[in-house]
Image 1 (cartoon, helix red, strand yellow):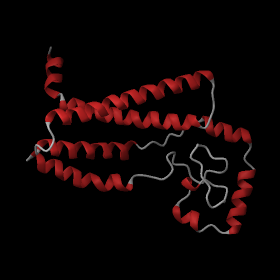
Image 2 (cartoon, helix red, strand yellow):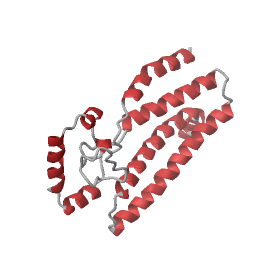
Image 3 (cartoon, one colour):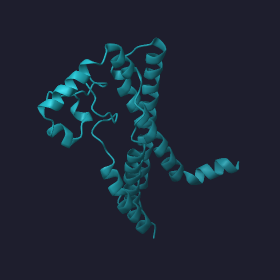
Image 4 (cartoon, helix red, strand yellow):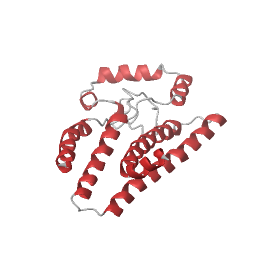
Length: 192
């Protein structure tokens, strides 16, 4: 019966994860030159990062739109660009990442219930996910602390902040799975 519930959850959650991802990791829209992140790419030479444009917008630009974009990009001062780079983006992939991790957990749990995965291997997978996410979150947190306290501003600030938050999400979700895996031991600790 547990297998059926797990399978139903996987079926209902998969479409959400498929449609949730966006091309720009910071959810920027029409990011002008020089761009707010190290992934800035302008293959069509319109002065706007290709990752921040919608696919229809990037292919249907005409020359008058390109001239308007160039004028807007020229009006941005270097202090505006520096201020934009120092403010981290608040758009993280909380829901899509959580749902994706949940689907992966449910698939591996289903394999475990069907004896396709051994118990030790199943537990090791999720222990390693928790350990790696903890280490990356801690390391990027220390880097961010040094960068912020020393007043270092660079285009890497957004990237480090983004990955710190993403691995923090993975760590929290995998901690919940850890509680599920070690529920009996946890109950003994709480009762004592």
